[in-house]
Image (cartoon, rainbow, N blue to C red):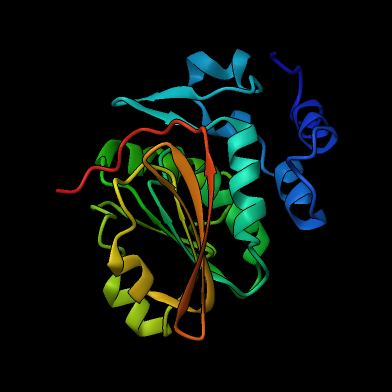
Length: 213
């Protein structure tokens, strides 16, 4: 179904139970998906389905993004690593949630998409304000130098499917931190607590593969 407005799309996500928390509902309302699709796809921006953004990549289905972010639980002040940032939509939703003192580190390996995402996020002044920093590089190993500098990421969101969870991501996560990532055809929630790893799996999802250089 193609919704006629961002508001209509968000209302549907709330009614169907995918969007629940007030902060995320507000973020979805303020950050318009239409600003993150290609010009030729503006008319179908509110379709509850993935849309192509070029180079074999997509902007994820709204329902899937809502589900992942509800499990990630972004909060003001979080430092979040966003791997496979693509169109910049998830990075911008996260930036809205972590402001004013948090930060999103967006990683995209395809240079043209990295620039596309950066330009889209700047429509909300998230780049110039320092709320999002973009890295045009392979995200499969995370950002070890940044993680060390900030004493670990609060949360890690991944938007491409890995065959298994890289140990580097776990190493760069703070205690009580969360990772939400597609592993094969499941979305996996990982919580790191007192050096223990708690894992929950939600099967039945499809993502583009995570490419490691």
